[in-house]
Length: 176
Image (cartoon, rainbow, N blue to C red; front, side):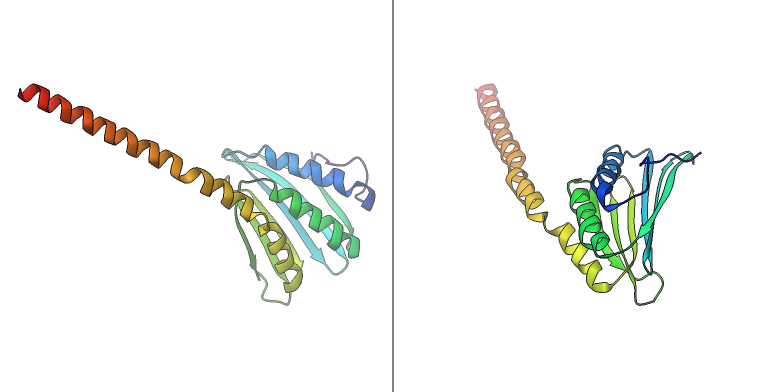
């Protein structure tokens, strides 16, 4: 039996609610299961599939959500979804691929827990825009890394010097 993330159809009024629920599922991500979110855009229709597959093969599927793709979908729903997923620091890969060798491309996100998000059926321009939108907060991550990367090395270096000084003093003291 499939679970549902919404009690009603997806509309502009409940975009944020749906995005929040999807985000909360990804916050539960672990190494023991993979979350797969697939948005498949064909012409003016989008079908969203969400599955959680555990290591032992158990699968929990959520009801597919289908709705019309219009400017609000592209400019509000997709942008909000990508911005919200960008809050999750576990995504390590974001790329654009052309799986079908057609004029449409797929924007992919892969997490460190092997979760996968694909948005298939995008124009190259929209995919590039989403990739840039997702990457725009990399400065935040880079700042966190650069502010913390040298601290441990400095303390280890100081500890090694202290140990060498103590060892030298012990050798000199024993030699007398």
